[in-house]
Image (cartoon, rainbow, N blue to C red; front, side, top):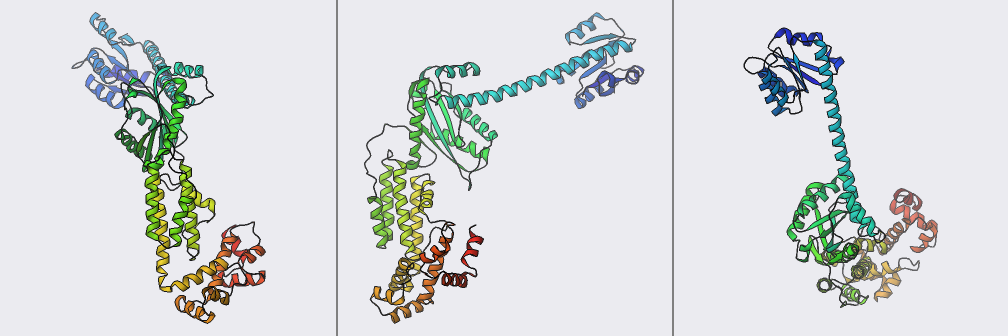
Amino acid sequence: MIKLVIVDDEKITREGLLQYITWKDLGVDVVELASDGFEALEIAERLQPDILLSDIRMPDMDGIELAGKLRDILPQCTILFLSAFADKEYLKSAIHLKALHYLEKPVNREEVKSAIKDAVQAIVAEKRKRADDIDMRLRLAESSTVFKEKLVLDMINRQVQLDEIKMYFTTLQLDMPLTGDFVTALIKLDIQVDSPIEMQQKHKEQIIKSVEIIFTDPQIKHLAGFKHTNHILIHFYGESIRNPFFSAGLLEQLRNSIEHIVGLKTNLFMALGKHVHTISDVQDSYFTAAVALQKQFFIGHNQIAMYEEECESVYDLDESLSNRFLEYIKEHEQEKAKAYIRNLNADFEKNTNLLVNSIKNVFFNMLVGLNKFAEGFNITFIEDNAKKDFFWEIINKIPTLAEIEVYLLEQIDFVFAKINTMDNIGENIYQIMQYISEHFSEESLTIPAIAQNMYLTPTYVCKIFKNKTGKTINQYITEVRIEKAKELLKEEKIKLLEISHRVGYLSPNHFAKTFKKLTGMNPSEFRERHYL
């Protein structure tokens, strides 16, 4: 849209121009009139015109003064002057103000139209040029960001040749040396959210911009980009990296910035690789940074770790480490079991070169053993699938040693709290329940067999169980079998006949009737409703 203001103290001139020229045909969309320079400035501030067509000689504020003031607020505005005087000084001023045309009065409409056409063409061309420049700058910025991130990743790719890296430097006009001092850093982002999220590209760009600002140093340069969604890769270079060039304060600044960008609580961990001296060796710095990243497991979130040459591990992490824990559990030594975990973790923290998965495997065995112990008292402390792979998933997704310790201690307390609530039942009831839990799959499981195992009479066993639980032993056996059957029904591949046998029923019909009596539906209906 092209906008124009006509300024002339002669009403007949300004209105005549408005009336007798078809402005739309010339490409002008909006035309407004002003009777003097002051009114023209008011209109200009509101309208932001592209063209000023002004008389030069006007009372109070002449056209030259008006044009000068207009240049201050609208430097791109095209100026056309009208004058009945061939005044040399005015002409000099018009040239100084870069007026596009100087038209003499009386007004010749054809000359005015020709001057307006020239002005419109020049304005349209300039606007197109500015739009193209903006588009080009945006494209260059976008391609530069993409190229820079690709360079960051290719510098750690052994398949990429040095000549290709040099081409990046040329394209991005980087003055990164081929030799000198280099260190690669990996920053792991742990965004606190219940379910995994895919970080938006705009967030990634904002985070990299924050990295560039926060780690700005006159002596140290860097290139940064994302490696996957939750790792930032930074290549530092410069002589000052021989000395400490990072601090927990910088990492905290970055954490606060990322939280502001994504709007979620975030933990960070920064790992620095070894110093190298050529671009080609940056790959080695990266791989050692990845090794140092393992230290997050030992020292926790929002810390900085540097790569150190590996030393010999103190512990042979075999099953014996979890066996002692399980002995304490079986002996009902709750506090000893918890103290054992705390002491073991304290030892692990001093040996950060131990393999993280080896340590997690020790805790995995503890969790499986604790679950087996809890099942002996008919206690379920994990509501989901209790398969071993699920237990490993639980341990494996916990990022730090301290958090694993907290989790295991909570599970120990939970199990023993459940057992303690059962203390009123008495030790004999524990033994009855444990025996049933271990033998429910046997059709021969009977009250006499339970009593014989406890060296008690069947009558006494029935009496104490009924008095303490409010249920008969046979009712409890049935409930345990049906609960186990429900778990087996989750597995679509296991046939109903096999499930029946696994829970102590040789007769499928008897199993189906008992199942329906307790659940209100037969096994097939239960499987279809809950698991298919």
